[in-house]
Length: 455
Image (cartoon, rainbow, N blue to C red):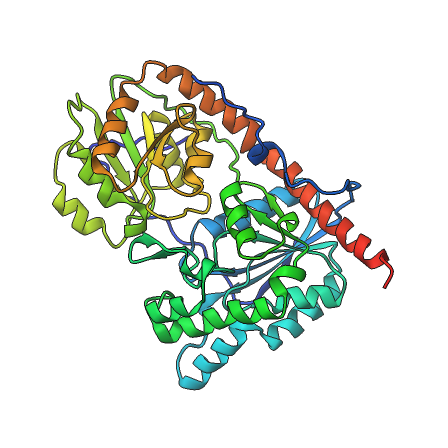
């Protein structure tokens, strides 16, 4: 049962972060086409027919970040999904806390090994010989594991699948963002732009090895030839990676998923509020949302509720003390779903190319439409006039106008029903499992096809 909170005065709840080991290896309205390629097809790019291959054992590889985020949750969720369906799995986890950052020698070693780590190559090759997986699924290799993982797999003839959670293979910042604006200079030009602007952690010095990692592996063909299948989370991301030179026919599209949880709370038209859930930082666009909120005419009891924490929270909470705005801080997962279920809309005002916000899938799972920025993949995942509405992220008047129109939308009950239908067709564990198995099968078949080809 979810915890009921008073969205007008609820105090923040801070969940405990999971404990992670180092180098851890372990076994085990308008009509919408809800069966669109994004949802129903694991890899919509036309290729020759593949026979369904049996997937017996999967090795999942992931480099955890120092601060756990949505990407880490997706890894654990996908691994649990495989195990629950009888797929034998092992995982190899590395945590960034294992990095010895003190001293010039250690820093130089990390910089070199981020591009290609010989110790990780040997370690993973040894693991592959022991585990003998049918397929290896890499989520994040940066910075400890390095792209040498792909070469270890190729050396032993094991197909490898890489989920593209961010844009690290193209952009040292991994976000296509610089100075709170979208930037694609490294996609269409030289990586020297990233060094000049210090795009990785605001440091020119720290950006050099990241840019070198991208360039070096481009030159030796790692991205183009060493990965059997890539998984892009959206069609938008697939197109960006194809622009960068990754073969388009190796990129499948498979969104994230969430298993629906039963929630007792339901939307009450007499208690209307908009809800933002996430990190309160520049790229998330909360500042723009708040500025636009003050311009919404005749709010008529409508409130804005903000759940989450981040570097801008204290400043924004002090700047907007209005009674119809409530900052609730961090909340546990069940409470978030409870608040989403009761919200009129969930707000996603991001100003950057989001990968695939789990907030949207969570909102869909409880039948709540989304108001989002018309930028990147967001306008693909949220269908304007079907599962929510779009607004121009940097136009406060437009944001406020869309809020006004959306909250007065006559077909709102039908929109909530459509959102539930879209979730069931696209974002359940059952649908995602079939998509993932198809991608694994293609990777294995491709390996067999290439092995049988005459030299």
